[in-house]
Every structure is written in C-alpha cells, then in structure tokens.
Amino acid sequence: MEELVIRDAEVVDGSGGPSYRADVVVDGGRIVSIVREAAAAGCQRPEARRELDAEGLVLSPGFIDMHAHSDLALLRDPDHSAKAAQGVTLEVIGQDGLSYAPVDDRTLAEVRRAITGWNGHGDDIDFDWRTVGEYLDRLDRGIAVNAAYLIPQGTVRALAVGWEDREATPDELDRMRRLVAEGLEQGAVGLSSGLTYTPGMYAKDAELTELCRVVARYGGYYCPHHRSYGAGALEAYEEMVALTREAGCALHLAHATMNFGVNKGRAPELLKLLDEALASGADISLDTYPYTPGCTTLVAMLPSWASEGGPEAILARLADDDTAERIRHHMEVIGADGCHGVPIEWDTIEISGVSEAALGDHVGRTVRQSADTRGEAPWVTARRLLLQDRLGSTILQHVGHEENVRTIMRHSVHTGGSDGILQGTKPHPRAYGTFPHYLGHYVRELGVLSLEECVAHLTSRPAARLRLPDRGLVREGYRADLVLFDPRTVAAGSTFEEPRRLPTGIPYVLVDGRFVIEDGRRTDVLAGRAVRRTTR
Picture (tube, rainbow, N blue to C red):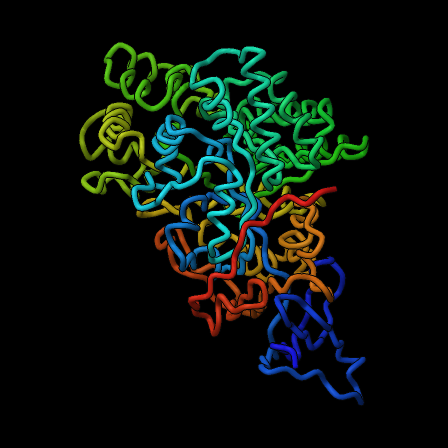
C-alpha cells in the first residue's frame, strides 16, 4: 500500500491550465497516481497508509526560488522556516557572482569577508569543501529544502586573477574556463555574475562571453546581476542580451527590476527589448521579487575603484581622509557605479542589519536619520559605520516603483525569486514572504495574475529553466515536492516592521514526499539535497 493519499485537493498543477479536484497518491518520494474527481465517480478511491484531507486547499508543485542567498543558512539553520514555510522546495544559490566554491584557502577567507552582510561570516560553519562538487556533497548530508548552485563568476575571478581592476591574462582566462567547466561537470546549473560587485565587475564583455561559451556547451544558463539597475539600466540589459547571443548561451536576468527615479514607468521598454530578442530566437527568462525596495550591503554602494583589492583595501581607503572625501564626492555628486550610476540619496538607504551588536541603534533607520540624531553629515555616519562594522552592514534601498513591479511580473518569461538575505536584525521581508505575497496580494487582492498563472510562474517555468525533467508540475512520476495552501487566507506574515514573521495559509509542504511543514509547523525532516545539472 502506498504511503500517502492527498484527498479532495484542488490541483493547480503548474502548467497554467485550469484547476481540477483530485486525489493525489504519493509513494517513494514521487507522485504515483492522480485520480480526478470525475474519474473517481463510481469507482473505489485510492487508499494509502496515511490519508490527508485537503478539502478547501490548493495542491501545487513546490515553489522554486530562482534567486536565493541561503548558501550558508542551509548549513547553519536546519529549520530554515524562512523558506520552507513559504512553500519553497528548491532554492537556486551561488547568486550575484559571489559564493563559497570553487575556492582555495586565500579566496575563501576573502569571500567570507566580502559577503558577510549577505550570509554572516560563517564562524559557526565547518568549511570542509573547496570545489563545487564538494560543496554540493555537503548539501547532500541533509538540508531543509533542495538547492541548485550557480558557479559565481566573481569568486572564479578572485581565484584566478585576484581582486584587481585589470584584464585577465590568456593563462588566467584559460584557468577561469577550466574552473567553470569543472563546476558544471560537478553539478552546477550555470554561472552567475555580480557586475556591480567586486571583483566580478572588472570583467569585460569579452571575458564574460568566453565563460558563457563554456556554460552553453554544458546546457547551463548565465544569470547576471548586470551593470546597472538605475542610470543606464536598459543599456545594461541590452549588453547581457547581446553577450549571451554571441556566446549561444541561455540568459536568466536576476531580480529584473527598473529602479530609481530615472526609470519610473519604463518597464514596458525593458519588455519590448526582451520580446524582440525572444522573437529572434534568444533563450531568456527572468525573476523578480514582489516588493519595491532592494536589499544589499552598504559597502556595495561604493565606487568600484574604491573596492579594488578586496575588503582590507577598502577599509584602508575609508580610513584615509583624502581618499574618503573622493569616495564621498563620487557617491553624492557623480553617481557611483556601485549605486548604479545615480547620486546616492541617503534618505533611501535604510540600515537593516549590522555585524557588530554595539552598532544596533542604526538598524531600522535611514543613514540620514542616523546622521541627524548625531548632528553630522550622512557620509560621516556611513563612513564610520562601514569602518566600525568592518563592511558587514546590510541595507534596504527604497528606490523601486510599483508599476514597474506589476508590469514585469506579468511577462511570459517571468519567474519568482526572493533575493532573500537572511542576515540582520531587520532583513527585507521578501526573505520570509515572497511566495505567499505573490499568492495573497498580487493574485487574491489585486488580480494582477490569476492563481493558475502565478503558480506556473513559481513552479514549471523555473523548472524548465533549470532543465529539471521531473519537477515543477503535479504529474504522475514527478517528484513529490508539493505545497498545500488555502487560497482564501494565504499571505505573507512578514512586514518591514516585523520581517521575520512566518506566512499564513500554508499548512503543508512536502519535500521528496516527506512533510517539512505539517499542520503549519516545521517538522524535523531534512529531505532536501543538492539538485545537480542534468545532461541535455
């Protein structure tokens, strides 16, 4: 007898087609049969050792978070309710060109320092890996949800070239190609870049194109955080489209937003660019989170020249008065590339977390508010915070536009991604609320998407981008990564005031056929594993 029958569920199967009522039988981690209500009339209904009454609940595939920053959180926090409670059953990590494999001892220490604001320093983690394959093996020991990995181009460049702003030599480029190929052979699904973050931003298009050629040979995809989401955003999107067309590589645009005042109302221009490329044969997808503010680190706002050489070099420049004044002028007057070419507005930069507890009074305030309480200029406050927190401060950047968010999420190649940074006292609520916020706010309350459309955006579309042959749909033979939610009550509990509140209306989540959320509570099940790239 099979393990589980989910009885009388309203199945939204991820295809985008209409829902239907059915009994769904799960055994051995897979969906073994689906008996629709009409077909069951007059017949004996399926039985199993356990029966779950799903009356009033929607059954859908598990949600796939196409842009996650859980690289260490998956190892540090077996509970991981931030994602499991949202119905996320697979996360794509290794984002924005910076993560923890492949590395050597030097690079690992540098990367840990550089992205402390994203993931913490990791003092509680045993970094017993160096290659991509070893990191994926570490995940296979058991994690809360599944995870796929993108090779981080900035980490690869740090390993082969360093943190200097210069072109790679032919030998260095060859080494980067080998590192990317090895990571793909070991199971990575593609390559990410952070082209407003050092050292990845120092790569010219020719270098990126060569790495994308390697990715294309293995059937992976390129996922760039491109060079600008502000001034020059459309040009930056065009650059990525052209680059990947030249390389013959699939493109997935990370957190594809149009931010800052210069881009208000310009989302249709982005979609026109993408539609023209798609019509000419380009393979493009994108992800967004359903909120207007962004989230990153305070140090990311600096101009690239101030970040050359890595974290220690940055701190030395900040400590020097003359150099610090040059940084200020570049940020406040010219517009630093770290702030997407737009002069920084300190009243849009909210401190969301610090590494040093003694600096906690900054959290929840904009830089300008913190400066006003101290009777000083915002740059003085920001500079001191960067130095005292050793570059570990995270920020919310309130520069988005709701009409752009809604326009982009309607597009046919759109998928969902939280871009969830779990660090800090007041993280962005998207880390805990992205997927129920789509379902509750944008489907039920606003009607921007139908329920069937939205579920497809969050399930089958990302599974197709990841080339997963047995995930993303409720189908017989597919893996039983499933979510049961109440369409009348599902909502994000997280808010900007209380960002760690868990969602409502998602009572059951299964990973590999095992309950990780049961009756609305996290179980102790660690059914997640690394999801490795499949061959074409």
